[in-house]
Image (cartoon, rainbow, N blue to C red; front, side, top):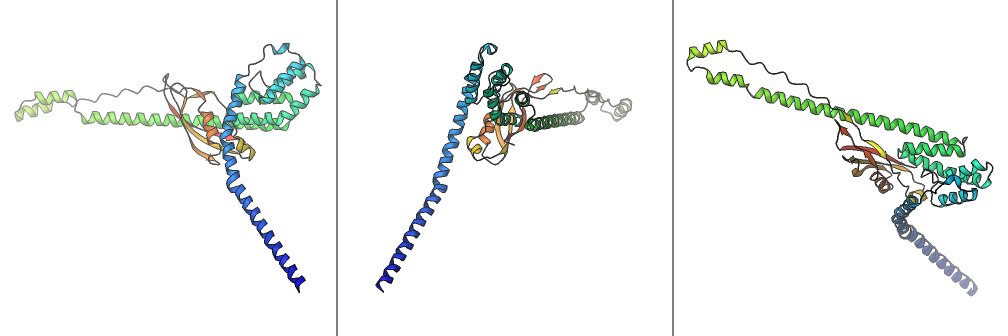
Length: 334
C-alpha cells in the first residue's frame, strides 16, 4: 500500500510539474507574439527609412570613375564589386555593376567571375527594373531592361518586363488623355457659365439709347404717342466670340522611385498607394496626400517621400503656368 501511495504521489507531482511548465511555455509564446515581436517590428519600421536614406545618399555621393575604358579587367571587377555592395546594380547610368561586368565580358567573353556575377544578380536587377515600371519612370525602366538583355538576352523575365512596360505606358497615356478631357470640359463649362451670366446682366440693364429717349420724351399724351410711334427699340450688340484657350498639361521630367520598406520586404508584402498632389507653377509637387492604399499604412510613407521629390514641367494656359491637381498610383512589388 505504501508503495502504491508513493507512486501515486510521484505521478501527481509529475503532472503538476508538467502542467506548470506548459503554462510557462504558453505565457512565453504569448509574450513573444503580443509584446516582444510587435516592439521589434516597430523598431525595424522606424530604422528602415533611415537605412534606405543612407543607401540613397551613398549612391549619390559615389562619383563615376574617370576614364572607365582605360581600366584594367581587375579594376573593372573591383568597381563592379563596390557597385553591388552599394546596391547600384543597374543605376546610375555609367556607374553600376551590370555595366562594369559587361565591359569585362567585352574584353574577355568567358570571364567566369563576370558571367557568374551577372547570373546571380539578374533577378535582383529585374526587380529594380520592375520598380521603375511601377513608378512610371519609363525611360529609366527601358534603359535597365536593355542592360538586362545584354546580360541574358534569352531570359523569359525580359518578356514579362517589356509587356508590363508597354501596358503601363498605355495606361499612363490613357490617364493623361482622360485628365486633359476632364480639364477641357471644366473650362468649357466655366466659359458657358460666364457667358450666360454676362447675357443675363445685359438683359437686366436697359440700353443707353432707350434711357435717352425716355428722358427726352414730352409729358403730353399726344407727344408721348408720337414719340412712341416714331421710336424703334435698340438692337442688342452681338457678343464677341471668346478667345480660344490653349492648355498644356504638366509633364513629369524627374521621377524618384519609391523605396520598398524593409519590413514589408521581410514579410513579402505587396501592394499599391494612390497619391493625390498639386503641381505648382514652378513644377514642384505640393500638398501630397494618400487617398487610397492596399494594404493600408504599409507603403504610405515610402510613396509620399518619392512623390514629393518628383519634378514636373508645369501646366500652361495660353503660355502661362498654372497649378493643377493630379493623382498617381505607386505600385510596390506587383
